[in-house]
Amino acid sequence: MVLVCVTLIVNGYKTFEQCPTNLQSEIKATLLVMGLGENGKPVLE
Image (cartoon, rainbow, N blue to C red; front, top):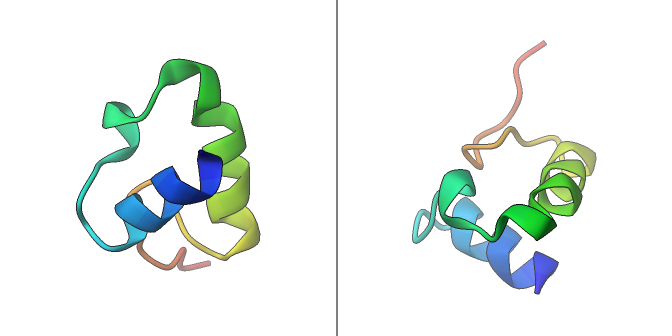
């Protein structure tokens, strides 16, 4: 389910806030590993 939500966020079909709250920490961690922020866009350092 986490990867489904990540895919939806990256493709712009869903926002981070629309994902289940019990999965948000795992979703955020997965996005960060991919170099992406909560909005699914690349994180600029």
